[in-house]
Length: 398
Image (cartoon, rainbow, N blue to C red; front, side):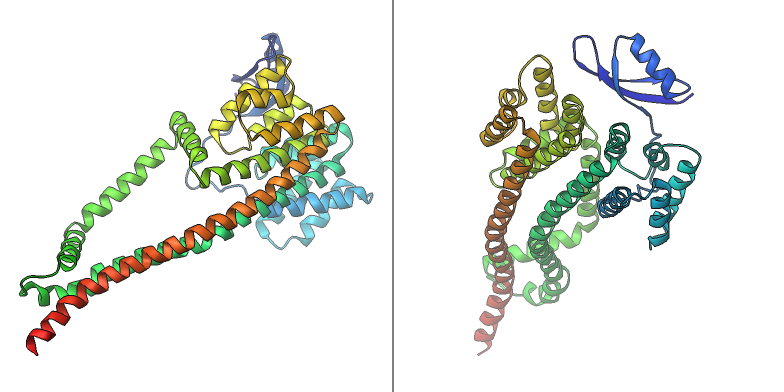
């Protein structure tokens, strides 16, 4: 008998989560309601994936294409089955074409689009839930267009972050490659020459000592590095460590500010999309919490949701938890008072998109000269440590 995960509100309007055995979602729904819990979502619990289990085929760009094309065809009067047939025929990716084929097969059997998408296990739960909302409200085309915009903006932000970090990564890689090249190839060729010399400069003695240590303990260093990676993988599965790590990240001087700006942009845009699509406020907040990608803020988001259930406005609840910047609360308050909260959230996301771009440029401007100085310092130290004894030796011969 399958196991189902569920989320819902109890009689005190507290969010509850749990698992329950049942033959089907309808039976599980009835059993949950008998516990005086109003279910929000019921999902069959997935078996844990192993290393050989394929990942979801639909990435963000495929989701953009799917949402945009489906919305356009549905709005043009094309029915869902024909729309799926067109998507299947025009797809150049064999794996994606198979997914469309599975969805089409289930739709032909009478299943809804959202159920057919969920059955493939190749779509994020977020898009499946939003399609369910669209089917229930009759606004499927509008919701798909909103999700297309959401994924496009999310991709744009992440691409900016990736692009800004490419050059620093190259510099770090170049520094490590330079050090390893000198330690394992250049310095050893001079070691025998320097071994018979007396009164070697301090820099040369330090370089020879470090080179000798690395060469004599290569396996030990490699083993420590492997153990360190394994330890991090174990810690990453510990919820307390993840919350601590995410909290520490937000408190860092420059990177923390940038991380918070990215999260606020994602939060505002996601919540704006959900509210604009007609998702109830509490369900929209719960869905937004799950895509913040920061456990520390997720925990605060849960507390804010409880405050909202107890009667506080969204802006006041977030302000009580001190989750974001003061401007976020102010603009939320304006949106609540004018009845245009979704539009105000879109504007807030646009503001923080610009803040993210500015912070990225500022961060790169600071990192580049520091990295160049470090590389120059490392290479300069090695060159001086090798060149000075050779010059001294040549002067002695002269």
